[in-house]
Image 1: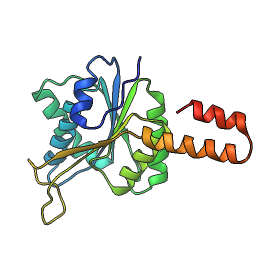
Image 2: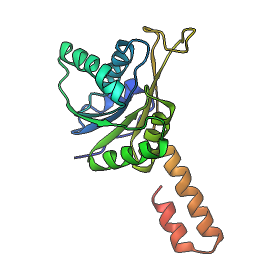
Image 3: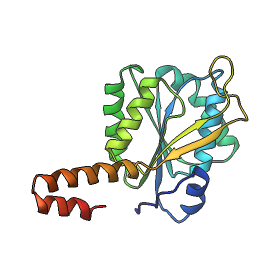
Image 4: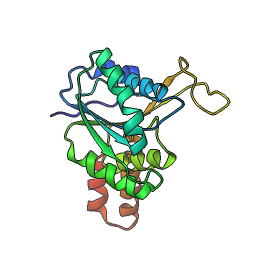
Length: 195
């Protein structure tokens, strides 16, 4: 299974990765305004990235209430993907969430995309940190105009994504500079060679 190239926008990313064999998405699932709003946003993300498989990180509540709405839309749109559900016991313990997400993300071989559009703040932090630890290719988020309760208004959604490779490259560069300044030239050369 091959890794894909990194791209700027979600639309570019989707268009350019049509020849990639295995893409996996890791998505936090919250409850939103009426469950259908979150389900719709998550399916939009799945539609854009066209993964072979998706892991849904759910709370007990979102597993019971939001996940069935996601399944319903996936069936209506005939989107057939492999699915795994991972239940988060404490949706506010970001360390537990990060550890569980990292363990699950690490099991998959292929191109990896994290989507933290919904879920608690701790779920978002946990999955993003896990994604960075596991060198995912893309971190994605859906935003849009918000109503008075702070929820995205349906129809105003827009995709934001970033490739963490920028962060990885900066860290490698800083480490190489540190090695160079410590006169550890072979280690510096090795780090510069990775960039």
